[in-house]
Length: 321
Image (cartoon, rainbow, N blue to C red; front, side, top):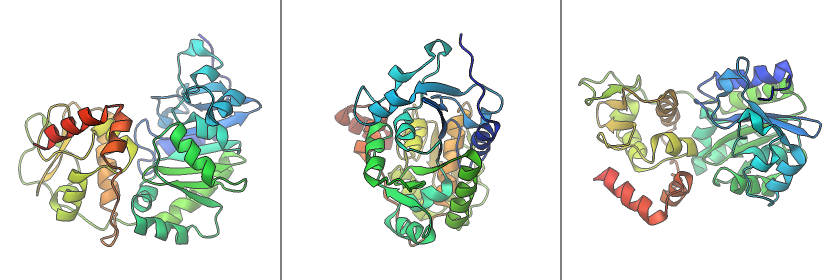
């Protein structure tokens, strides 16, 4: 088994700081990278940024090979670029955009403040105004992996350091980890939005095998209930919770929304599933009433789950019945 090379302490601290803040990263979401010579170190798939200071969560890939995959070579997974396969770690599916963005340090988060803006046309317009003066670009939604990398390439110029990803999240890049941390803080401050919808404690017991999550506004507010049960708005929601939340317990669905009561999650749900359920509440309860979020749609959901489109539609119908 190989050993991880020592990485700069400030880079590890940036990674852990992002991963420890649920308003920026939820569970195994998000990723960071650092380019050292011809080697790109990136968070390994399935690991958590919160553990960056305590565990070996980064995998080394050949930067040249990864960049070639960003531009269309190979299969886009960058597994062919792994320098130490004996460690058993796979690079993030988003390694290609880390290779493409020509800054030494890159941090990608699923920032709640960014998601509030990046899921609606009104929010994106507001974000453009709020980020005026920063080296920012806006990227339309594409499936994570090479499709997203290609969309980033279309908007990228040498000076861009901030990428707002439609229905996805935020990328901040810079010359050093402290530079990235400072710029990310500035973006978060400018995009900060308060909670505008509160809920009360559910007045009934959760369904059998479920517990109430410590948030209820998405179930008690009619608008938010409709949004949460008719669409999904960013990739990790689909990956960890499935598509739009069902309104009753459904086999295979880790969470459900009981109208007028609360958000119920299975008692044996994973920490990642709990984090994503909380993220949905964090996003929707900050959504200004005049903003209408755009769901990613059933085709994008099927892509994320690697399902045949027709089989996916049938499964989706079964969840709603």
